[in-house]
Image (cartoon, rainbow, N blue to C red; front, side):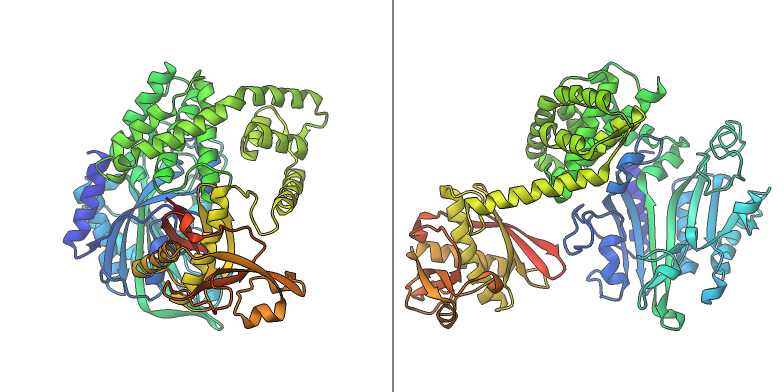
Length: 636
């Protein structure tokens, strides 16, 4: 059974059981400024788990693309990946434990044909001091399901202490393992937050213990159990029962009890294959083959090379999806992690004797693997390959020299600790992300002074800001023709947004390059497509009107009476520079039929006539942070 078939069977199973199948959300969250990436299937569902009505109803299922940047340095073993798909189903105040648990059993045992003898489950032990009882209901349902296939499933009360006794198939664990809330364990939850017990599902890869995985592991001095890290067991899914809400007096049952299931597709496929190495599932066959061809090496032949294979496979698969979801390599935000993935893949490919450009071949293999499940990858293939090629070429141009400099740094470092200045120089001059320098240092028995690295970074940023301000006090670091046009476009857009959304839609920041503009503004809701189109049309109408753009030096109080928009009043002196689009004597209305379109306090410069600017196009509207939206736009 292929991994694509597992995904399809899961979605079909829950569709047959009354669930609406929804498409995967983007890896870049649209309305959650608290995180850079979608890291689980639950994440896009949080508003509905908290009570908001889902437009598709009370039973939802999907396969959600997920990325966890915190696992980058964990990749290399046989189970960690940064990118994965999370199979998920949710009950939003509909069914509960008595239906969810049998459904999961049927999917695993009847649909996927997993041997129940190799399945294990964990349940919540309870938290007496919080008044939360043991989840005996889930344990008893699992017991009945085992009994239905002739297995007497005993329950282990304290596996951390006692290990696994013969016949035990269900285990109680504490809130550290079998409780879910956004904040973690119950004591960390703020008042008002929902949470609940969960029951996790595990697969045993060595039921007869012929491989002695535990005995040969670093954990051989403690009892083995399903949550042990020895490698014998793998969690393949988790059923969360959102049934409590924290109050000032403890925990109360929620009026709407929800189910949130998440199961890693790649891990479930590993269980179906009965091979604990997720990198051997069919999703990686073509990807792995591309690396074997480029390197002349075979996966699995050597431990250190296998580690490198896994890093390259995972990182370039993740980078492909991130770029497709608009996180192109850069030094900021999500793009920083895309850059880090690509450069780390290139670094580890050297351990496979790959010294020439190879990333595109691997990315093409990723797209070929996923093109049916995610057709948009084919549509964006040219853009993805362009970004990957550009990033690989950029890093290779400095990689060799940077590695030589790294060796020189080691020779002059006396205390086995690389200075922050040296690490920052590697970053600035040779494109080494701090994390790569830390890895290289660790491999040689060194560490990096990260505190002084951050100090060097802060000094550099302060100097850069000062330089930009010196070049242009109005907010631009470049006063070329296109940048000036974009600067004027921010004034037109600001006026348009205030007309459409209200006076509260004030500018909160902007960033302008010769290629595009970015405009941040105060607004608590995602703009509708109609509002976006209206803003774009208003700006283009002002451009077509060919308004003159003029400035005056005025006393601040006079500027206010002329309805000039001031963004940072505390920075202004008694006399201010005011730019007007349209008649300098009229009052601004953000209407192309009006004589005056906009007026703002600004240092300039601007175009002399709006008709020279070209066509304005909004390419994206997204969340920037809490209560702040961001528009990205271009002039064509």
